[in-house]
Length: 414
Image 1 (cartoon, helix red, strand yellow):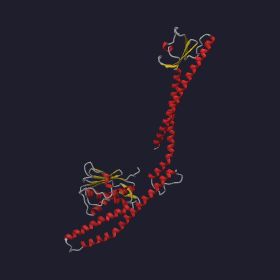
Image 2 (cartoon, rainbow, N blue to C red):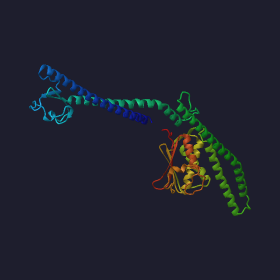
Image 3 (tube, rainbow, N blue to C red):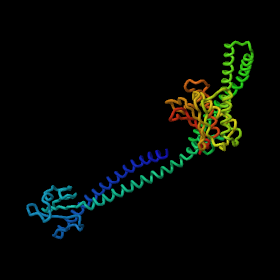
């Protein structure tokens, strides 16, 4: 912005400088012309009067002027161009010699006077003036740009500070502060109002999700309990038993959805960080999935037994559970690999992968890939927790087929 301001103002100044310079050069030319004409008139008058008084030709004493006198019909003086001698009485300009000559012709006492003024010296002065004007204009243009840029930087510094506050971490301090210029104060107040509206909307959304999650827990628990009671009845038919099992499974999925909504509503902030053995955490998450009846052809866990990560154990367990469950669901029961390289943990499957769409879109809420069952919040919750913990998570297709989800445990700022 400051560059655009500096360029715009400098361009306007350049136009003014060029206009003024042209006017100055034009004025200088007119003054030189007037000076030459006046000099010719004075010199002719002086030479004619003194020649008449003294009886001999009194010529100019300057090397750039030459005076000739002859009577009509007589031979021309040596050095006088016949074309100049034939000019009418008055003032003329001539370029026949390859340079500009000013010629004044006058007749007195039966004699013809021709005064020739060589303009070379005048042109040299004019060139010097033009060169000085150009150099001065360039220097003034550069100086103007630097000065305007400095002034613009000073004027926009407060705007940059406000932008840094908008982008930085918020501590609840209003953007509008005493001492701001009127224009910036209006922008800051508008930002405060927009932030307040956004905070109110987020608060309402979180309250709604939290209340919905709490309200769903009681009826879901009742439905599951009733379904389990039905399953204990030995007289229950096979068809009814399958329906009861579907009720239990559907209730569990709904409870998981409510729990995920509650975590998202509460922002899933880490409550406490402690060193956690990463290999043990992965195996525990896999054991819980096995206990729920979920299996794969093979699971390869290649993690250094001493590898640890400082994290909230419950949040880390939830992330690992969702990653492994996602690999099981979309890997279609094929082999799963869990590999730690440096500070990056990768969970890869051998399924169809993400296809042609952007793999990072898999982290969008309620997005389910490949028509697989689920509520579409697992990976969204993983990304949300990773962001809250300062980690980064990436999704990509494997070159040899399948999908790979990677968590970088290094702080996101690094």
